[in-house]
Length: 65
Image (cartoon, rainbow, N blue to C red; front, top):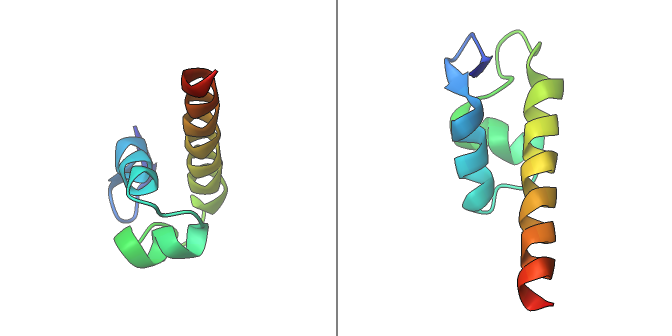
């Protein structure tokens, strides 16, 4: 699903960046340009980033238990 319509950036691209170590909206903006035009996608992009990071953290905890 497209999150940033201005730059045609999908939720998959945001998750891929998170997997590569991108941790903030500013880093995401620098890496792929999300929220760099109108900014309407900033909240959604940040939410996807945080949720993906949380999911990875929870998965790591379960794996180590």
